[in-house]
Image (cartoon, rainbow, N blue to C red; front, top):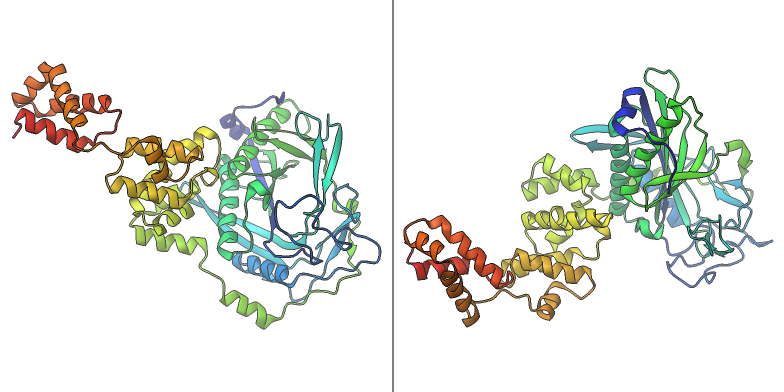
Length: 500
């Protein structure tokens, strides 16, 4: 539980101007690691995907992964970056247990891609996020702290290390500081990571599954008094692992830092841990400067010099990027830019597109993803894509509704079963007996009982007050626990009450 004092968010904006920046780490989906031939398969037994090279054993020599270099260039091209004609790797020296070599092979002053940008839209306003650099490096191993209550090193009895992840190709995409977003700063941060994730998916360079660590985001936040000529001291919230949490991390840091500055306190340049359960941050360590890492050129790797003709071919072969695709889909689905923005903000564009591809109409797909499913994601405090239901299953659910097997009310019950892991929609409908009740003896009895049990309402209908029939329909639906078809019930009541 955080004990930090906080300022109301709206009050922060009356005195301070936020500046944000994002450092996004993307594990590339290559078959082998960055500098060796070890597998990158996720979920293998700990320390079974290692070799002398990725463990940094004496005498071992690295060889750069050509596919990782190509993927990095394609990312840079998609972000409008300049591609270096010559660059090289460097050694970043620091000593953590998850760095088996005692240094990380990365790029420092000569990155592969520089000076790009990504435009994002929030509430109808476009914000340009400038990209400082896109560089290629290797990932670290993974620490597991055992015995504590938080999963962190403080309070743990001992720590375990899995080196399977050490050496996996990792692309770091670093923005320049983003001033001028004001109250929208948290949403701009989320929108940027959301759009970047969509681009990476379109390029097919990574699975970008945040829950598996394929995409990790460090969120930099600072505040300065309005009108100040200097930006404030930034904090770096490390390894934020969901789109929703990117926004929450910025929002919390703005409120926390404002409280510090209001009391003439000092914001320290440090890393911070984000806590998913509370939406708060806590101190990590003081932030090092570049000189602390003692960078120097990697002596065991030759420089990288991408051929201009090859880079041109990669640029020409880029797929349709998300922004252009959204314009096309808006036309195909017959929706406005505002409606498309709703889908983007909800992280639902791909989900709706895949649901349509599985056979649903665009209108029905949007209705379910932005309605019932968005509500459930919000209640669970998670992203839409993290729900345990696939676009194909949503399309199947919609098909059962349009085919008359179930109605919307029963569909929600079927969705309960799908999310609980009971199978696909049709399977759940059959197992739970959720199919719409046909014009059976049971339904006839329910209709007759509704008339007999509500004689005053029935007389009003017979007397010409047609709207009163809704009460009788409701009575039948209650008796049948929503399994009756409302239109069928209404027709049966009209026949019995001789409504013209």
